[in-house]
Length: 240
Image 1 (cartoon, rainbow, N blue to C red):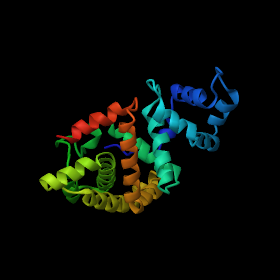
Image 2 (cartoon, rainbow, N blue to C red):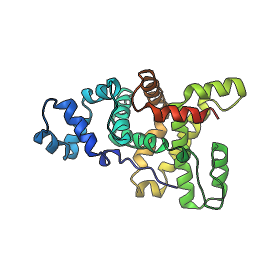
Image 3 (cartoon, rainbow, N blue to C red):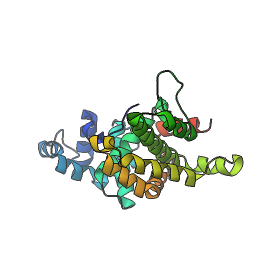
Image 4 (spheres, rainbow, N blue to C red):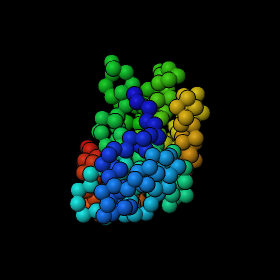
């Protein structure tokens, strides 16, 4: 089990930097001043908040040559700010979560190598009964992540399944995500990984975060964004 960390901003590629230069400093091969500013953490964060980057990602008419880390960070940061969640580390964490969960296998939870991966929340909760301290923390974090991802990206699917088949509704996912992020935030490993403040915010603002992701998922798919293939692939998975 892997601990997701808020580290999208340290994984940007040369193509990401080239995209920033193309959008913010068009018509020049390089911009030494802008490149230098991108190397400074505070300046970089201010640059990444530039509305022109957000618009270029959503409205581009050609294939985007940017990493999923850059793509999700810029878009998530915008929708979370709009929802009143200003902490960049929270945006970074949620963006990394989306980047990770574009890999289908990350949706399930591999507790030990001896057992099949767990795919459902009730299975993960049951696994807590026999988990050691470290594994309990990882399970709690994964339940929070899993709940946020599914309710954030697939709210309509959850509503449909709840209405037609009696499956858990959005309030169930919100409750599971909120409570498990809260418990995880108090764990010593949350402090070790410097995740306690992030988990606390996600617990307290789970509903707002979930709705912000609803808005993002709807806009990305509606606009036919060049990177929507990952999201559409996950939508197909959610129909199973």
